Amino acid sequence: MLCNPSEHAVSRRRFLGTALGATMAGGLGGLFSARAAEAMKASDRQVLFVWLDGGISQFESWDPKPNSLYGGPFRAIPTSVPGTHISELMPQCARQMHRLCLLRSLCTKDQDHSSGVARIQRGDPKNRGVPYPFFGSSVANLLGPMESRLPPYVVIKEGTGGFRAEDAGFLGPAYGSLAFGDGKPPEDLLRNAALTEADDEERNALRDLFNRRYAAQRRPALTQASTFAYDTARELMRRQDIFDTSRLSERDLDRYGRTEIGTHMLIARNMLTAGVRFVKVASFGWDSHGDNFNAHASLVPKFDRAFASILEDLAASGLLERTLVIAMSEFGRTPRINGHAGRDHWPDSWSLAMAGCGIRAGAVVGATDANGVEIKDAKHDIGAVFHTWFKALGIDSEERQYKHKGQPLPLAHEDMAPIKEALA
Image (tube, rainbow, N blue to C red; front, side, top):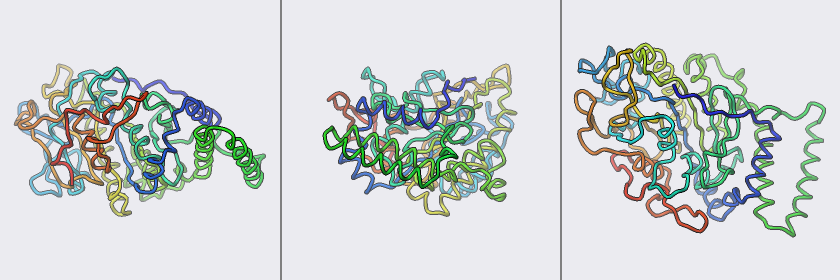
């Protein structure tokens, strides 16, 4: 089973220090470019990225093969889209199928976690000798922060939290992810009880005055980055309600499920509503080399309830129209069932689910053969999927480029293109 990446708890002081340190290397300058400022006004699109770490089985979720050689014990059930069936372990998602798009023709390369996790989340452009950013870092860079001034790329996960600069690749640490362990805010985020709100405002007004004087004789990128870091932390301090699970209604807790992924998905809903650009919910424990069927009988219904509920709520609030929703792993699981009643790693033919802005609702793209071993028509690698996501967000990944040390670099694999059948 893949171990969680080692991370360190982050205090408000460490968060600010990390952000400021990154900006001193020039990392945050892009957030204040004319392009990013324009994007802040023109784009309100957001992303919910549900990462099922270890590899959910396509057979026990989006592409069931009952009564086949490798189908397993679970039935396929009809959905709200006539003719489309998914696993009986996902009755709630079956009711939301008219909002979903299933891609059943993923064919990727990596059979191990260490390379697969990074490659899938970086999009695997041609090898250029530089580490590409994770999708969350790309979105934070290309679309910028939202008007809320909350961190643009956050992760909600079990265990510890912290700032993960490595997600940003060559974009620089400023575009890394801020992880909230167990969905809780960073330690020491609250204002010291001895300091009144009025005194805090006076201190920050004085800081703003000094910053303006300092900025008058220095490069704007440095002072703007400092202000961004402080304002982001202050906004988190003001928005404690995002993390306050005691405010969640009994009805919502029941709908999402009183589980870890249920609570984390509710916090993700709060963050999207509050104006976070990119929210990643990471769920662990999906690497079912042994006892696959009991493992999925436990895990999939929890995911099903939480994922279907957030789709329903985003649709009801109107947020789904501007939010790209993705649920996926680093690969699927083998058709063949091993001697431990498990399924191993399988990148050859697997599935993911999408919904929201720019995505063709109710569509099923691609198909596998009767036993789920081979893809019957066009195969799609992760590079094509990245192009599809960028297109859904209004980013022209075939024309627009990154700049790294003066060198233009493609946003996604230049030999691939968006999957038109998945786009609205």
